[in-house]
Length: 471
Image (cartoon, rainbow, N blue to C red; front, side):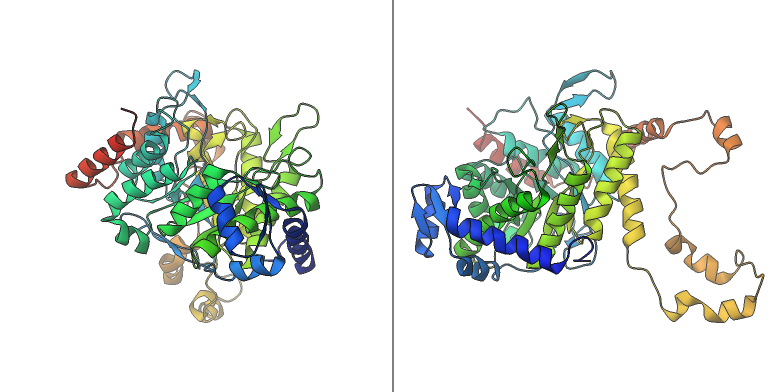
């Protein structure tokens, strides 16, 4: 899958150009801790800019594992990144929501995180739960720990966080997860959450973010570095120039993590975007942005690293045709390119607007893409040559035992798409798929219960949250 869109020569040139940038121009590391690590590794440190020889970057990246498992607290939803499979995560950090009952646009709350975690716990295509919004009713000091708490209480799946801007925030999430996992040793052996930290394009690593990443790596928590370069704004207006900047940011950070903690579980990550030249609007679903995100997955494959690739984030404001085509294509391209995790289910308006029903619709698109790309059975049993010989020309297979045995695995039964006849659809009230998704949300919220945590664990979680909350 590595060469689905770009040739090896293109990927190699991106790698070479990026290492030239790091070695000759340098990357700004605001963290004194990071600069001291680089100094010890033989890099040249000029105030806050670090220049690293290419061989130091290359040798450090060789320490990173090529795959690992994202564990779930129930043990039933563990995700092996060594499989030829793309996993789907909720999107995150929206600031606004359309209230499910009133239809009014409002600020986001912790209750939105809880509700979306519950919905995603139910939906099979959503493999990973993430704090979907940046809750406006939580203080900044407690945001990271309370968001993770909301996810753990409402889902037993693996959790992926991103609202971490300091080593303190990282330590708070580690402390909370250790309470759920049964201690820090157990958490390190089977991490039930992971994180990615955003870089600052162009060519800058935030002090708090990089120190959070170092804290996660030391604790055994998988961590990715996630550039969000915007073509023509924080990177050159060309695909090639943007990929050179993006790759330099990713590998300079991942190399630092490997020097500090050899063998640390890391992701090659990114969610580059473009802008609309007519309005200046951020666009994550333009053809160029989608190609860039495909290339993020390809570069991860070039280095042999697991990946988190930004997906979804349609510019549409309401569920409908635009969201459908933009999201489906954004799921398909990086999946074809071998992405490990797609981060981006459930939000609209460039990942800034939450509508509960949208994740039901996007889960259907995600599962459709996954069914298209999944490895299929080509055994003798699947070929059914004896049966074909027996039935001969003009045979009908509907009542055959082979059909009954294999039909549920062979054919996808969509839980959402309308496949009725026109007459049946009309008789049932001409229900739109958006209305069907709203009905599914109501059904989930009324009936689904996540696996409960023991009372003792919940009490310990409460104590951790209180410890990191403002007095």
